[in-house]
Image 1 (cartoon, rainbow, N blue to C red):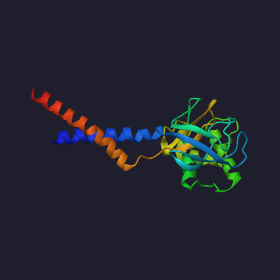
Image 2 (tube, rainbow, N blue to C red):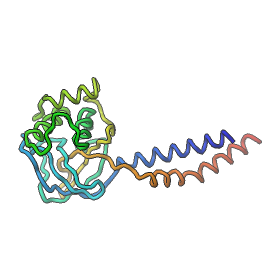
Image 3 (tube, one colour):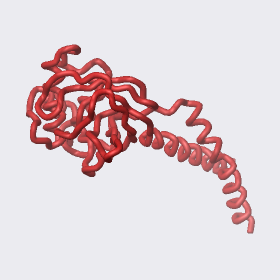
Image 4 (cartoon, helix red, strand yellow):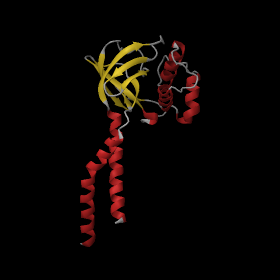
Length: 209
């Protein structure tokens, strides 16, 4: 009986992980509604409205790639930045998560100077030419340690928003992954329960054989 319970719990755990990982694969549309600041290479943060992730402020992951106000693009969330094939660094993920939480130390919300400085820090952490090693970079290093330039791989819930338009890929942005509702996780687990029951029966038959 104990083994049966452990087996079912393991299967539920797998279902939960599968459901949670699907949050990193949100797709929908995104429209730039406001471009704030004037950092080198394409502006500071951008206010965007999306189908699937809501309305929020974001920053660019790549320089000098067009993303026009008022235009609607398709997007998909990923831990990989496309089309370059790079990744969101751990330092970038930390800074953006703190920014979105409204608790980024040293950042003045509503300030173009702060927006530009944070964009420059993100570009530095992403290896872009217009990046600047400033106080936000120092903050990221303090928070994440020696791994600040490694692949965040979804840490802090931060992902790349890979945008495409009629001509192909446009400037990738930062976003936070959608968090699955508890009911969704439970539903995913329940879908695997019949498989779990069948597996337990097979194991019992093999044991008695």
